[in-house]
Image 1 (cartoon, rainbow, N blue to C red):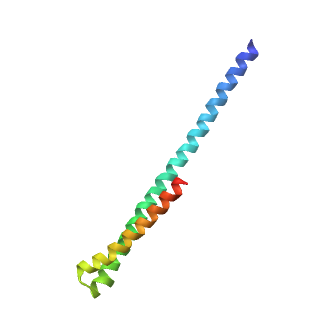
Image 2: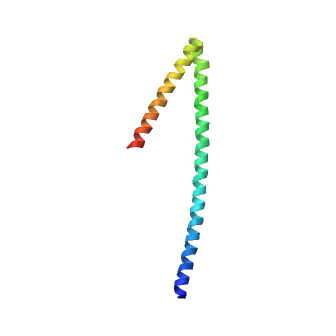
Length: 93
């Protein structure tokens, strides 16, 4: 009888230890995801600044403002569409 009780208690201790380890690793994953999310935001801001620089410095000097905006927006939207399509194809395989 005491062997069974000791077995159950040791099993409970094992479960507690496993839960603590899972909690630590899940916190690491959450922190990693937050850092990746922040990096993605800064990456998108950088892409936006590059597009604004392209628009203001290079295209607006050669074309009317509406044409420069159009020449900046169309390739950007095409690239976004291709990336979305590739992501969809990858996700559905």
